[in-house]
Image (cartoon, rainbow, N blue to C red; front, side, top):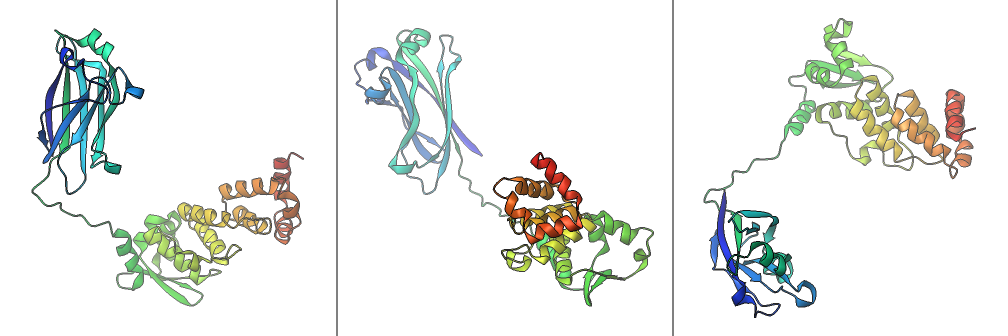
Length: 333
């Protein structure tokens, strides 16, 4: 809820003409949102050397709040018909108390005195309509809502076999899982586990040519959408076998987000010594974003000579000779 107060600030220029720059007149104190406020107006400007002939106006917090308060201060001039002028309207939102011991905030150059007299003065008086809005203090406690924990709950499903309806055997290690979760995350698993394939009728599936540690990471990603830390992925100067295996699995099971995670991580390892291996992975496992970056890296004049002589790139050319044509196109030769 918000608390708002409006007041009219009438400037009688016959009474303010003798004020020096830096001198001000104040409104009555008003209570808004449980705090006491005051509006200070400097008809000749708050600083003569900077704001001469400009009216300055500020919102001043009189009380000493125990915690920060957000205040909206708005000021507009009433024209000669008593209607707000859109040409001289200002508004701000500020958190009080102000920094560095400041007590008020507003506009040094709200309007020139000559404009106010020419456009808005009625019988020697200019009227400013001022509004202060503050979030009102509530007598009710805020009802805290805990952060979402769906990810941790889904991840806990992998920690025991209770409720699982499918298991995978990878290099002698068994991983219990849930058909519905896998099918929701991967169209390949959906076809495999709910389609007309023989696997749909099996309670255990043996997977060949896979690393069990990488499969475990992939499985947890499918449940939690998160990857483990670098220590588990392989934090080394060269791209780890774990990352390469994960990229292969992500491609096999159409896990596009996991594939891009792996690609991003592999790109962090790119150097003239490793780009050949990483480019090979990008080509083999259909990762065009990583492939384009690698080719651009190789084609850079600072990298091209050293890269072409590296063992990893020489092996790449032997296994995927078509990559040479793409590199030549990039180099323009």
